[in-house]
Amino acid sequence: MKRMAFKVTVILAAIALVAGAAEKVYKWEVHDMSRPVPPVITPGAENFLPPSDAIVLFDGKDLSAWQSSGDGSPAKWKVENGYMEVTNKGGEIRTKQTFGSCQLHIEFCTPAEVKGDSQGRGNSGVFFMGKYELQVLDSFNNPTYADGQCGAIYGQKPPLVNVCRQPGQWQTYDVIFHAPVFKGDVVEKPATITVLQNGVLIQDNWQIEGTTFHKVRSRYEPHGPTGPLCLQDHGNPMRFRNVWIRELKDNTEE
Ligand code: MG
Image 1: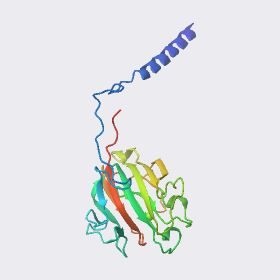
Image 2 (image 1 turned 90 degrees about the vertical axis):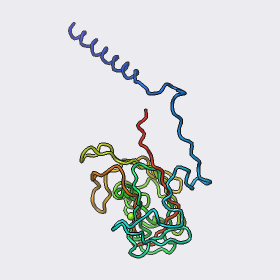
Image 3 (image 1 turned 180 degrees about the horizontal axis):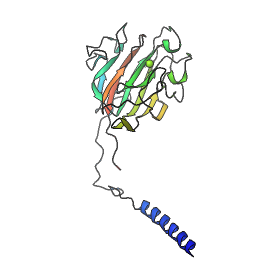
Image 4 (image 1 turned 180 degrees about the vertical axis):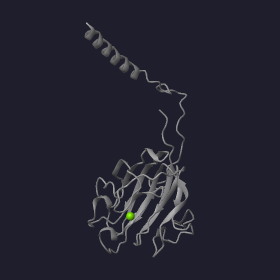
């Protein structure tokens, strides 16, 4: 009898749990007319051009939004014909403004004249918050380790597909990056990244494992809520153009 009573209690508890779940309180009613509508923005004249709420980081004219990562001096890369190009010993550059979660559009071109192989060919990288590298490489018929090819989260995750264009052709990255959240020294919410290369999904909401390193397993290093966007100088004359970013508020709305 006691056992029966226990069973009934368990069943009733389970029903209460399910009922409790169904009673979730929503901030807004379905089709609630008082729910704020999203802001209106104007799209770029073409989909690759910045919409009205984007921060333009490079419009082909100058490097005023950038500085040398090493010492904060003016960026030493070359600007011509609407693009910027890594110069000999130009060094890594970073944005003066810092960002957390964001949507980024950037176009890159690996050298038309193919020199070197593996990681020595058309290498650069886009570093979110100065720490998380989305690899840029000439991966057109250029074997290298999978987690270091173009579109990889360096040392962590190869791209889903290799959709690289030929050397000397312009390519696009469209990225949605969510910044990590730390509680003290511990990561409470890892960063995530989604990447389209040339319009094709190559990273699908990848949960970033930490700061990206060469030959060292990634790990999180606590940092603030924003950081610069950095472009790597890996000794190759890489070109970039049409760089714009939209700051994202992490979605806490139910
Ligand atoms: Mg790189």
